[in-house]
Length: 289
Image (cartoon, rainbow, N blue to C red; front, side, top):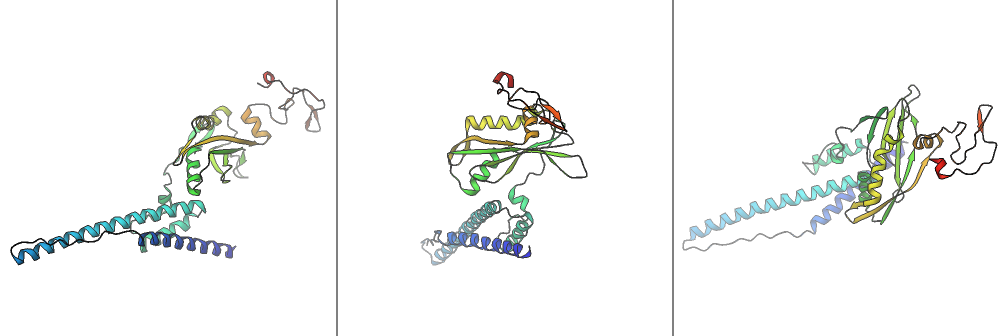
């Protein structure tokens, strides 16, 4: 465990050195403006020297402003590189905050000292009372843009895998969490779309899925707007176990008499289980709905 942490710390240090070296190399190849000393010719020698001195002072002030502008531009570029790197390798906030303090002390006086400032973490959460519990919606578009930009991916279509399931928060409490987890086929990194927390399941599956369904409809119709253009969107698969399917479809539980999603036969209770003893035809569309 200790060797793994040391290895990760060494990789963090090497990556920061690589970013600094790349930015310094870009800075060294950047063309700079030359100073031009203009001599103002007058009839008296004293006036000529005084005019030359004034022009040199003005050029010196202009050069200082240009140097400050270049340093600011390189500082912003470095912070942007650092932001993308921290998101790409999932750097812990404590490590990133420690690195930012060193950057501020030795490199950029205006750099933030906390990871939350660099990552622009929201100060408040958009938690609402919904479906008999607390609910927060994170969205799909913002996280898709972030994941595509960090990895510099250019794809015509992105497919979203959706997983829905309920999990207990702890053994000592009846509090449950019902997240909808998404993962793009092209990125393979899971993320939260909405999250529900309560002592019971969401009381209304339509209300629970409302924000998710509305955004999916907009993305499927309009696409995802990126810097490279419009990217098509589709849902590739939805993954849910039997309790989650019964909740989102608003149908009987998997242990009920009419629990089969594909036929109309009534099950038989035997030894604390429900069995389907007959082979029945598949439900017609009107029977399903």
